[in-house]
Length: 247
Image (tube, rainbow, N blue to C red; front, side):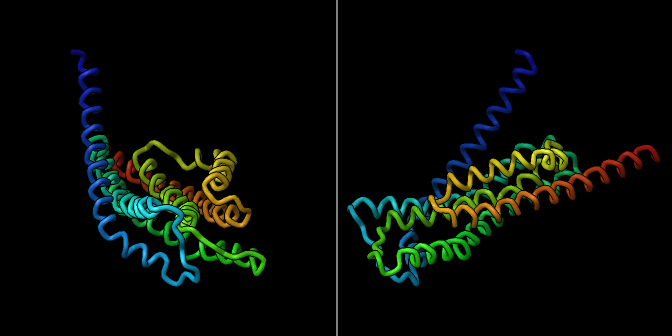
């Protein structure tokens, strides 16, 4: 067999093995999350002025599954980051490995930070606005299904899109991304972020704005992260070349 074909097969086998680890970790964490899902549910509805209703006996299963899935995703992220890091580790230079290692905790912390921002900042503002808009003209009756769908659609996009700086850091340290590409793609990126915020959030103008502005800010942070990592990368490469020439 051609050595190149053999090398591709080995890489595909490694990818398959890493994916199985990640999927297995997610399923295990999902099971654990479902075991504690009632306590998590109680925390999420704590302080809510209205009682949530169920329209069918199966609604509670979907609600618990959604809550458990979000928790499982959060704790699977660092595991996924570790396996991605292990997969690309042989191709990294020694001075690149430490920077790429930051990718693992960054995934988890940024996801939790994004979810927290959506839950503690954006969600109360939007919910309060909707309740004030309804005022005394309507009976405010929430089903658990609609309430948690609304909650997840407002918070999950932040958890996912807050990952952008970590992904940019990893790609830049690996040499697959440069800051000038992010700067040149700013208009296109802004358009994609705007469309994404509209599609992922509930259909109201306030939600779109509250999601859009932080995500644009995150993109600008990602450009600065990429520029910083890229400068450090160039400096280390220059230092290594200088050491090799002097020796």
